[in-house]
Length: 75
Image (cartoon, rainbow, N blue to C red; front, side, top):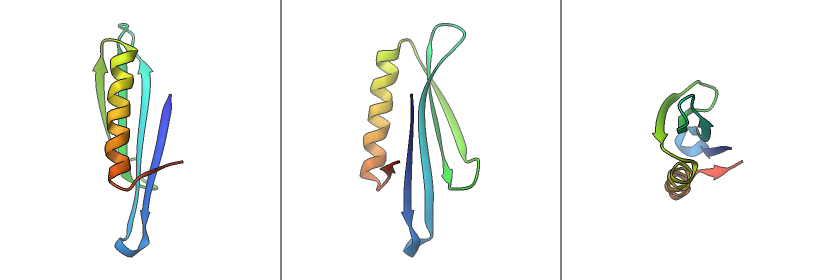
């Protein structure tokens, strides 16, 4: 599952992206991969490990709501 969000504000020269994805690991965990940065760049990345898909999905929804409050919109 991958969620891609953008925040575009030409007045403030803000062209940002935020991507969230759930990926399985080799050890049976689920990784929540968060990437963010300026549109057109590789950006930064953090990988959070969760013991199961339910907790990873909860964390994904929490980050999604935070980004929506900061002006990002899903594409």
